[in-house]
Image (cartoon, rainbow, N blue to C red; front, side):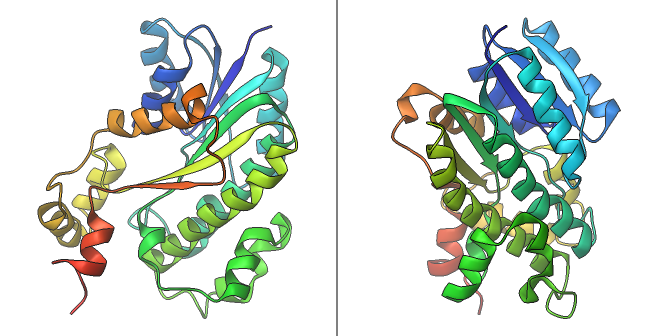
Length: 275
């Protein structure tokens, strides 16, 4: 039996974090796509990691629970990297809410039951949640604490209130941050920590979909006008993920780290501000 790191979402960001925190541990790599999970596993295996794979649908409680059970069969789950999700250009509002919002709530709940003392998790959220307008205290509390199975029934998440896929995505990512904060209290009872990272434009296949999609011009403008003036690499997210999952981050829990090259700062106070 060994310590186990679970990676949900076989993309570049999940792999970048896993490479920094999984030496000497069992990596359980899960994705909804068998093709993607096998390709990612091959890369990590070739790099010397001990990797097992699983198929998971994060919008299904039984699927997420089965993944948690599988992981505990290998040993103590000391790390969770939740990087699964769909973007506004990839999915409908309903699918985004089911995967990015409800799915994240499921992962936090099911893995909150099995995390080992001293373990830590990180949820990959998005800068988009930070650019959504302010919600009421009641709405924030509802997104943070509503029981998972009742979450998608909240009034603010109904089709007549969700105008498009981007709006759904922003709400999902705001909810990710709020639910991580609430989950930190429950995870703390087990002696475990949970945090979120909200990346900006990270140059991954998903980002390339966005850059070539209907909102591509806006994304390119973000890159050009943000203080850093470029997109980021997955490895730059990996550095922050390793901090949050490791001993150097032992006093950090319930937090959301905005990692966007200053895009959000420019949106509120710079050239990207709505006019």
